[in-house]
Every structure is written in structure tokens, then in C-alpha cells.
Image (tube, rainbow, N blue to C red; front, side):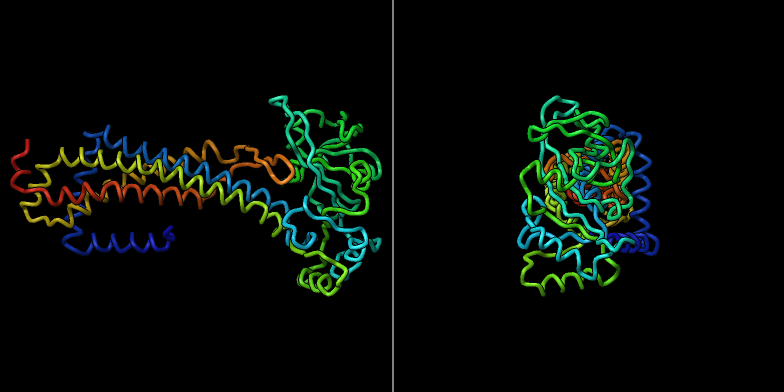
Length: 413
């Protein structure tokens, strides 16, 4: 949990102590001797490195799942678009907004308008449907989203990869890139059965975010097919500029007819990722802690073996005037150097194997495809775990090495 600036400060103080004090010089001399003897006890040293690499690799992989999911959802929103939901509801599926309320909010001044003087907004209906998964053949859920005619002005970054956009009022769908690759029946030119009706898949799109896991159709057509006329689940709006969000909130709150609240889409989708990210953080930390206990015992054993092989050497140095502190510090330094090597190896393997690896989890309405994100922050956290394991694992053997009898040590064979 320590911030990096604190660790860097401690490292700088350690270097200064080694360079400027007699005890520091003794510590460095003993550390160099210990490091040069590592090839003679390669097996014991490998136990420390490999054990800690395993802990760090697993920890980073689990935390990268939460980071990747959070990154995907945060990419879905922006600061210049707002989502309107029913008061008291945290997600779209539980929210209902009447068409009258949608009309009133769309006419408010903070909402950006296009060249035809039309509000750039999209009343949306969000449903969960089941389709066969390509890999298993079993039904799995995904999100079906009804969007308004201004959706392309709302999200200009979305690209049609194949086919065309759906026609308003018709039973036509377009599929996100990930949904199209994971579910049967979503290739352009095919059709799917929804609510007993046949819907034509006329296009495929790439949004670069969580929308890639959805299929889209016209809001009015979907509302009619699913008997949801007269309301939408949410309203997405493009705002005019800085300060428009607060102005829109003020306008909404001042109208007693409107039982809704407003936030940016970035904030909304960020909140949707919090629970999963928190869960992965807890799971990753718990599994990492359990594995760390094993790694600590491995480090203790390996360090004891190292000390046993250097008993006469340590006792000779003690007899020549080396104090206990340099002995403790040198053993800890040696163990933490091995731990840092293990942490770096584990972080590299986690990055090489898992960064960008595609995973799937369940969202509010169905599966969401996302890529694991092994960020520099996670790599740094993994190495900090490694250093902590090395410190704890070397502390007890270091104390024992410093307290052993000089006479008995000199007689050791």
C-alpha cells in the first residue's frame, strides 16, 4: 500500500547509509559476497525467484481483469454527453422515462442541436435477449439496445464495418463487433428470432467500447415488438459545452414534473464497472495473500539454507568486528534482490501472456467482452508485493544469522 515516493525515499536513504557509514560499508561487503555465492546454491535461490514470480503473475492477471473491464466501460462514455435516468435507479434496465419527459428534456437549452435544429439525443430501450454462443452452442444473454435516429451524431466515432445501418421503423438490427463474433445468427445478411418475430441483421459496427457487445435496432420498432410503447429506459444527450451539464441539472430539478436525474455518460459507465473491479481486487488480493504465505515460507527455507552454508563465513566476519546490524541488513538485501528478480519475472510473464487477452463477463443485460489491461501501475504493485514478500521472508533468518554464536560458527564444518 506504500506509495512509490515513500519507497524511493527509503531506497535513497538506504543508499546514503551504505555509502556514508561504516556499518553500511560492512553491509555492502557482505551483500556482495552473498550475491557472488548464489551460483553455488542455485536451487534454493530459484525457489525464491520462481515462487514469488508465481504470486506476482497470478495477482497481476486477476487485477488486470478488473482494470480491463473498468477501462472498457469508461471508454464507452464521454464528458460531453449526458444520460438521463429515472430518479432512484442506478442502471438503465430498471429505469423508465415517459415520452413526454423525453420531449421536454430534449428541448432544454443545454442540449446541442444539429443543423436542422433537432436535439442530438437518443431515447433508448435496453433489453436482455438470448442467442446461441458460437463456441458452446448454448444460449447466452446479450444486450439488445433500441436507439434513436440521432445516434450517429451522438457517437460519431462508431463505424459501420459491414453492411448498412438499420432503417427506422423496420425490424432490422446491426451487431457490435464482439457480439457478431461470439453469437450465432448475427452475421450480416442473416436473421434472428426475437419475440417470435424475424429480425434481419443488416450491418455490423465497431464502437471500440462496451457497445461492441450489443446489438442495436430502432427504438420505436423494438418498443412495439416488446410492448414497451410510451416510455424509454434512458435518454442520451449531447451537451453544448462546459457548464452545460450543471445547467441541464438545474433545469431538470426545477421542473416538478420530471422525476429524473442527470450525469455524464463517462460517470455512469464508470460506476457500472465499480462492483466488478472491486470484486476482482478483493479476490486477487486474497489469492495473492494465500500464495504469498507459501512464497514467504519458501523464502525463509531458502534463506536458512543459504545461511547454513555460510555459517563459518558470517562468524569469521563477526570475529573481525562486523556488527549484527550489517549481518541482518545484508541478508535482507540479498533476499529482496532475489524477490525483485522474481517480481520482475512474474510481471513480465503476466504482461506477455495476459495484456490484451480477451475475456467475457456478465453485465446488467448480458455478456460484455473486454481486454485485460496489464498497466504499468499493476506491474509496480506486483513488484511491491514481491519486495514485501522478500522482506518478511528474510527477516527471521537474518535475525538468526546475527544472533548465532561466533564460537560455534567458527567450529562449523
